[in-house]
Length: 344
Image (cartoon, rainbow, N blue to C red; front, side, top):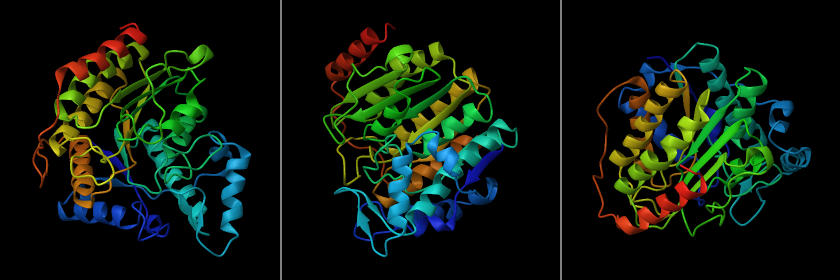
């Protein structure tokens, strides 16, 4: 199994040490991948920055111009209370989006069977016209546009299991029937979107699938949601490629959320996504780094994704499992409503 691996040292230059989304996050992942001997087993590909045209395939001109204006400043800017940018942040964000594009190119071009994009700043909260939630450019959305515009893929599935709803990805593809967006996320929680009834608009009605669940749920809840909703929706859609917005902030030690996933549970999710890709689209799948703010959980989580993509069975987990809420009735109600809304 050949796994394309795209990352870059420049991803540390977008940094605010006192902010949850800081350069130490990606450094922890790099260090753990190297320590576990995984880096050398991956096909390293140097990313190129996303062009203006590639960015504008997913974002408005005003969105890009706002980042251009910030690049001309000589100080850190807070776009909102959560989201910072530095003079060099646009070039770093271009490279992050370009890395995910590069993974798409490698898989669609036959250079690799699957891909891994370890990038920052993250992207799934960036809407077509607004930077927010630590995110400047929507990396996975820009890459999904590349899959269609440059490689002719008719249908792309985006699975998002960051603990926060991927409102930006939903926004960009809400009226686009060529992309199915499925999100499992904590609710109520930031950014406040992702209700069952948000299912897409016009010809894309039914291609947005939201699974909002209360904090406190863990491995069994996520497994059931995947098997009973994510998998049948994906099979009905029949994608040509799967892109995964993977956040490790649903882990029980994460400081910003209150889900109870373990690293074993995360590993099950990754392998379930890979198995889905093998059934539906010849194994074409790319995992993209989003959130996760406990450095060890984040780093070991990405090592486990790497092993899953490479076909290696074992996992690394310094934490074990937590006592999840796992109230069957609550998960049952989410599954029942999702299956009703999407006629499963």
